[in-house]
Image 1 (cartoon, rainbow, N blue to C red):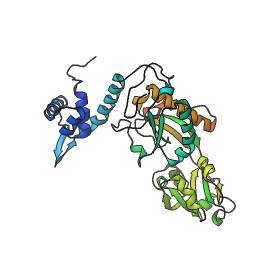
Image 2: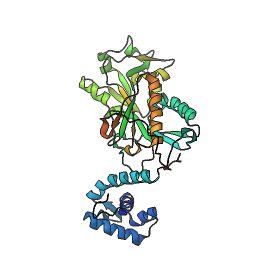
Image 3: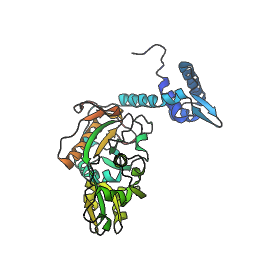
Image 4: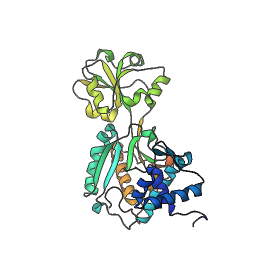
Length: 336
C-alpha cells in the first residue's frame, strides 16, 4: 500500500545522493545522466522541503535532515534488494559465497579454527574470511551502506547501535606473568595489583569495562605499556617484571615455558563474546544457517546450550526457527 504523495522511484536516487554527496557520482552509481539526477534531487528537495545537499566550498555536505535520512535510506534499499533478489531454497552443500566475520585476534584464535573446520565440512564450496575489527567497534552502525560483512564477534558490553545479537560463549580474565617475576611470587593479591607494572591491551587504557571495575575498587593499574593485539601480551611480559590481563581461553593456548597463569584476586566482569549482525539479514536463510553454525561451534567450547538471540539494541527476544523458503540472491560476495 502506497501513501499519497510518495514516489518510491525516488528511493534509489535518495540513497545514492546521500551516499555520494555528489550529483554526478550518484548518477553514475545508478546509470543515470547528470540532468536526470539533478531532476531527482529537485523533486526530493520539494518532497522533504529541505535542501538535503548544500555546497560547502568545492564539495557538498548533508543537511541535518539529509544526515538523519542517510541510515534510513540505506536500510530501506537493503530490504528492497533482499525482497527482489529472493530465490527459493538454500543448500549449504551448493553454496559458493564467502562469509565474512570481523573478529579480534582473541576470537580468531579461540573460535576461528573450529569455525573453519565446520564451514569446510558443511559447505565445502563456501569461503570464510576473518577480518580485523574496526578501531571503534561501538561506532559501527547496522545501517551502514558499506556493510560488507556478515557479522562481528566482540563482547556484549560494546553493543554496536542497532545490531541484532546472540551471545556465543563466556570467558574470564586471568593474569599472565613470567615464572621468575619476583613481583608476583606466591600469587597475586589486591595489594600487588596496585603496585605491579602492567602491559595491557590498548582498549583497556581508556574505556574498557574491566578498567572501570578496577577503578571502582580504588585500583589504578600502572599501564604505561600497551599493545593492539592480545597475542602480543604474553611475549611482552615474558622475561620481565610486568603482568598482563588476558582471557583464560587464550591464556591456555599461549602460556608456555617462562610464563605462569595467575588467578585475579577480584571478581571481574566476564567476557561475553557475542555475534552481532545487520538486522536486515535476520530472515536471510543463508545468513541464518551461518549464524546457527557459529553458535553451534561456540556451544562446543562450553558445552552449554546456545543462548537466545537479541533484537536490535540488544533487547531480548525469542529466536525464530530457521526459515526454509526464502534465500537472497547475490550480494557483494558470491551468491549461493
